[in-house]
Image (cartoon, rainbow, N blue to C red; front, side):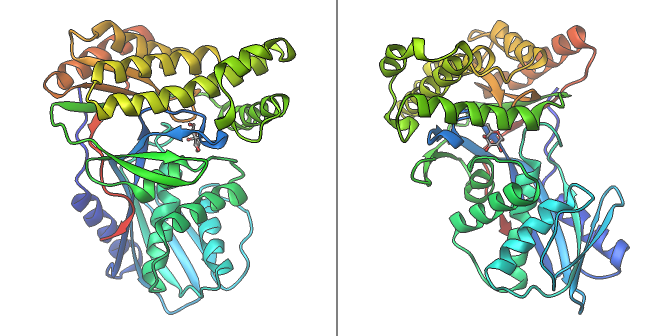
Length: 390
Ligand code: GLA
């Protein structure tokens, strides 16, 4: 079964109501930012590669108003409240989620902005821990809110980079640029092809109503993610050093095979993923432009295999969900499927025929549930607008 996406207007209403009932004030400022799903190009944003995410119809909304103080108070649907002093240099402290906020606030303080005190209420429809960038959405929504509060507008790229810095410095996650770019640059009916070497995004139209994107949250999130992410990143750096190249964009598969015996097995596999995934992503975009969707789907399956076998960031549940989609196959309306995001749990992304999307989702849900005993969460999405004030 496909779960409905809550309309943004309803989420905004809930945030306004939350602000009213928690702080007894009207929402004067409303900012939103979406989560993201990546169609192809995984674990190569920190390797100068290409990635192809889209902003999804799952959002975080912040309703806020000024409070005539130098403090920001943030309340959530779970009744958490965090207070942050805006007049001092921010430091990492608890609760964990507040560090994303502190990081974004510090980003604006570093730019010389004085942020007036405000009260805020946060609502989200982005499943957490599902590899759909709920934290990037939090950063980008707050950055957008602060733009409103200080009456400025950063260049979209600068806002995305400020949000990424917040994650690096305050959440200590050495992430690439994909998530924050997707959340900021998202646009209706457009995929975002990001050249992670130049930092330039190119919009790729995705209008065809006969195609749908299904996100399947496996509802597992193995706790390895942070340490393993850092270790994959370090391994790619070591491999590039062995290749004596300054960027992965200069490395071809023949280069790699020529030096194969200088690599240990693990580094060779990592390098093989990076080089093949960069090429696959470029080829996949060409296929999309030619509207050759079955080839695009094939690249998605290949990408999954590479992430599973060479980069080793998948897990049983992700592999199962992809295998189930593949079983439904082209005849059943599935064009391609793969894990998406950092891995070790989280979600898969499946490209399929719209008229079959409901049947596909029911079959995936039932089979996955039978096999694992876990009820997955499935929804379909089209590319949507990035972070903005409402
Ligand atoms: C996480 C990171 C991204 C990217 C993906 C893997 O989502 O935040 O920058 O590296 O993993 O593609």
